[in-house]
Length: 234
Image (tube, rainbow, N blue to C red; front, side, top):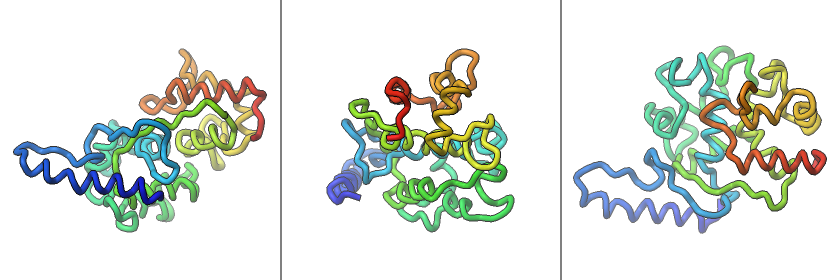
């Protein structure tokens, strides 16, 4: 993590208690309340942002029907927002990924492993995103991550696919039979599986990602620009 980025966040958190102590009602420290602490401009590559990096990954891999959505809430855990995730004791221990149940269950075996079979386990890269987020303080941060100036498959699409899609669309039994873990599979899904209609969430199409974590207009445009360019493996 860049020292300057970490220090700016920590200084804000350390300075804030001077203000909280003068108030009689509760005020959440910056980046720990329901509303995200928004950073204008491009995302810092060394900072994990909850809204862009963590929430979509958790919703697609854990917050599904019959698991940890609001209706099913297995084990009393609902994964749909920062507040619902942080509300469960020890699920996330800010600053200590090793003591967080969210990380522990990723390495369990059998029925205790999350996400459970037949879903594929999270990749090393996805585990690293969650681990780094917790170790960085488990803050509710947001930034502007969409850049359409130089769209590439590896730099623009793969990060979105990794956090938003591959938790469901990978492994031996990917959802809908659509695997999105390689360039060849993504191009095939565009050509033969109506991928863009799902990403745009067109009427009648199977929405992907599911409702509540849809790609924004700029992120959809990244896919469209890549397709218009001939879907290169760049």
